[in-house]
Structures are given as structure tokens and as C-alpha cells.
Length: 433
Image 1 (cartoon, rainbow, N blue to C red):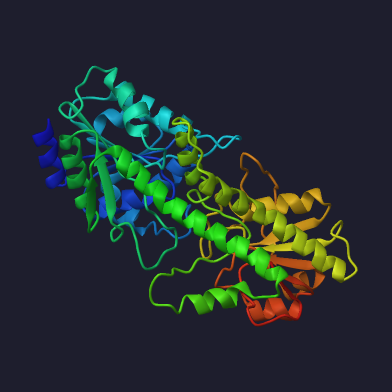
Image 2: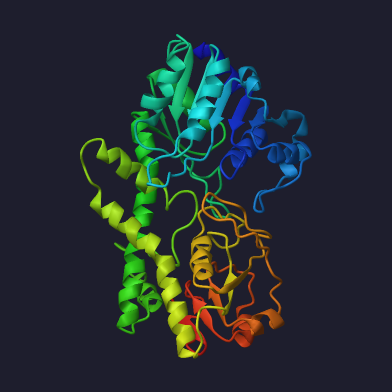
């Protein structure tokens, strides 16, 4: 089985199946198509499936021209029974948190159980969804083994963490190194062969647990350092020291320092969520990850800090937050993308609504706010006209999109709450938050 699958991958005749056609799955689909592999995309969201089969885009920064170019080699479906027809299955589904910040593995379990129904000899399964160390071996493998197929001989299982960065113009799926860990040496060998066909560099590691933990460390590192500068921002504000100027000066050091920047809170599917997968797993060993949990507390408290700064700034203008007109600029979690997953904008808006403010927003990439587990605001982006800016009591910059005309915003806005350091050298009408 292994040799047959090796030949199929080496000759680019292996049929690739990708479960989850979002910000991680779609770039993978595209890379396999670009390298000549036949691909089937699987997603339970019928709208996504229909869009792909009609070659229509639903993610702003991903070009869908490739689907037109390779249309004979690609199709999308929500029929999971067709998993039996592919040779390689890559799982790219969400791994959110539950209310108490423990892992919500329902999407991974559902995908694995769907694969189990059609699992056959000669298939390679790769889990890419970010998760706690031990998931592949402790959760996924036992489900497959109930089929009485031998791992490393009849079927193969690896973990290779996604490293997508939506909107990054310097690095892409092809150029970002890929970490791979396998359940057995044969699994690892096939995993390395598979990913070597679509990325420039593959880093094999000794186990799936190491691969799983690699992804968590990458995001814990960012979460902790962002929490550090967020805390510094609050303290330095009291000291009347500009945190942005401090960071700019510090990053001139050519060694031993990497610049991180404060903001209104964390967003995206990785940094606000992934560290808690590790803290949850650590509790199984009777250990508390105090450092990581403290960083999480600081980062999740930032929307409240933005609210307090806004409330105080309005008070200085003899206004109350209640019934004040507040415009949120940017709801995507990062600039120049339409990715609003876990965006701090939603939390800031929720706090403003609870205080009785009249809230609206503008985002050139997010036409309507999506319903999430926690929020359903039913708002659409308002055109950013001088009239709109003049009618607002306060404008809060949450996402610093580069196509915003910040001079126009400053000219027509009465009060600007800047959470991103856009107006570094301007104090008139601008409150740093």
C-alpha cells in the first residue's frame, strides 16, 4: 500500500481531498492544483460548495482564477461519502473554544467519523487543524483503528499544522516551511513526500505531538508578547509615555529584540484560541500555565480598556457614552483582509451597545457582520463619507486598513480613538488607546 501511494504522489496522480474550504483549506487546494494534482474539496456549507463549483470567490485575498484554469481537475462537494474516492485526505476544520475555554473538537470528530465510514486501505490522512498535543494519537487514531486496519501499513496518519497568514504578501503556502509528524515512520515518510510536492521546505519531526506543540508554541509566543506590550501600553499611558515611540526606538536594536505591537485585543483563529488548548492539556498533568493564562487575561481585557478610554474622552467633551454616535473603523482582525474571525471589533461593539451607544461601522472588506456564537449585530458597512464622519461623536480605529484616507478621517472626525498607532505624532482630536 505504501509503495503504491508513493508512486501516486510522486507522479502527481494521487487524488487529494480537502475537508474545510476556508482560509486554510482553500490555499491548500490551490497549491495542489497548481502542481497538477486532481483535487476534491469537501465542505458542509452548501454556499461555499456552490460558489466553488461556479468558480465564484468568497474570500477577498484568494484569487479564484486558478479554479477556472484547472476546472477539469477540481470540484467541490458536501457529500462525505465521496471520501472513499480520494487517496489523500487533509482535515482543515475549525477548532474553537467552548464557553469555559476548553477545546471544542466537534468539527474534527465529525470529520474523522465521516472518514472512518469510507476509510480504505492505501489512504493517507493529514490533520492540519490546530489542536492540543496528543490529539492525533489519542483522539483520531483510535477512531480509525476500530476499522481494524493497521496503521503504517494499511493506512497512514500525520499531523501537519497550518501556517496560513491571510493577506501576507511576502510569504504564501508554497514558501512557508511545513512541519510534519507521523504516527509511524512510514506515515512520516509519506507525509513528507506529500507536502514536499507543494511547499519548498518540509521539516519532519519525531512525533505528531511535537508537530502539534510546534504550532501552539508559535502562537503562544505571539500571544504572550502581545500581552506584554498591551500591558505596557496601559501603564505607559498613565506615565504619559508614548508606547509606539518606545517600540520604534527599541526595534532599532539589531539583536535580541523583536517588535510586537499593542491593539484593542486579539483576533483571528490562532492567537486568541490556541494557547488555551495547551493550558487545557496541561491541567491533565496537574499543572497550571500561569504565564500563558495571564497573557490571555490581559489580551481579552483590552476591549474594556478601549471602552474606558472612549468613555473618558467623551466625558472630556461633556458627552456621555449613552446615545453617543460611535463609528468603528475596521472589523477584520487584521489589516487589508476580510477575515473577521474572533475580531476584537465585535467585543468592543458589544460593550458599546450595552452602554447605550449608537454603533455603526465601516470596513471596505467586510460588507456585513457575520453571526457568531456570541454576537449577531445585523449591521452593514456604511460608506465612509465626510458627512458620516462629521455626524459621529467618536471614531474608534480597530483595524488599520491601508486604503483608509486617514487625513480625511482626521479632518472631518470630531474625536478619534486610535488603538493602532495610526496618528503617532498627532494629539489634537486623537486619543491613544
